[in-house]
Amino acid sequence: MPATAPIDLSTNQTHANVRVRLAKDADLPAWQRFVDRTPQAGCMHHAGWYKVLRDSCWVKPYFLIAKDARSGELAGVLPLYHSRSPLTGSHLSSLGDGVLAEEQSTVAALLEFARSLRDSIGAKFLQLRGGPLDHPGDEAFMTIRTLINTSQPPEVLWAAIQRKTRWAIRQAEKTAIRIEDDAALAGLDDFYWTYAEHVRKFGTPVMGIGFFHAIRTHLGPHRLRLYSVKEGQRLIGGMLCILNRGRWTACYGAVRPSQETDFANYLLYWHMIRDASTCGASTLDLGRSAPESNVRLFKRKWRGKEIEVAYHRYFPCSRSPSNRSRSHNDPARDSLKRHKGRLYRLWSRLPLPLCNSLGPLIRKQLPFM
Image (cartoon, rainbow, N blue to C red):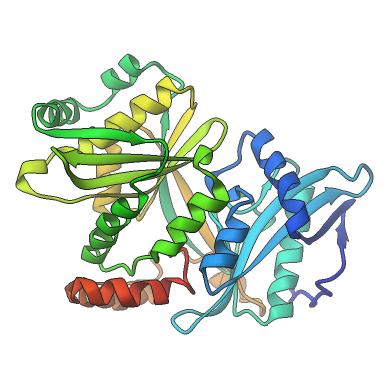
């Protein structure tokens, strides 16, 4: 594909009777109404992410809005942000699930604008984290998303999960472990520090607590659900879910492992599944996993549906067709993974207070990794 010409960011771009432009603060209520009425909307399509990124991260949000040129009705959205991290260079990335639109012509118009935006701001590449495409990227790598059909009653869901998983849940129920629903998000700060300790063990820099405060402020408690995992009175973990009309997404979770709390994670996941079913959510999205990770193996225990979600990168200069759409087992990418693995192991061995100080500084430029 030829390089896309830069655009004037202050104007509309029209493509196949679809007009695309940058969204402003005044567009966000209409954006959210569109998300709320569109069944395929994901948790990262919420309009509130614009202010979360603006207020708590060192990135610039570029949210694209598409309208039908004839009716003026909102036809699609694409939330993007521009990062200048020294670790990855200048890049333009979508939030999870990419474009939200019902017509392919709208998808094409939004992505044409996004590639023009990439060139206008001088970004090294455009990354789309899932969602519909107009054509494959120059590079692609795969993630796995696990979806639970919670339109079924809890007893059907219980019968569907593995027998060993049901046994683990019963073992947890015999202990002092319990799951609490924190509707007011009063325990968000306490959960954050447990979460920060958890991700450090996996070698991942943690987002700052201000990021979680911004989620609570700009998405609103009615779009969030916090589960606290306690052993007696001691908080040992939790899960923060983001809600759409018919789809709940488990986004940030952690359980402090120990011999006494071996099965706490099982009780937490079963509680979420049962709660989603009881509250009328049609789908519980357990989030993405690396194809060969232990996290994916744990999610398989719940007998959900696995779908492949590709992340595509588009570079300003086209590559030869033979190099297009390289998969996650590409040798160059495998080499990069091994390098990252060493960094993750090093990070996991740093003192926790140092990680909690440095991690938020790194993640302000890389809000989604």
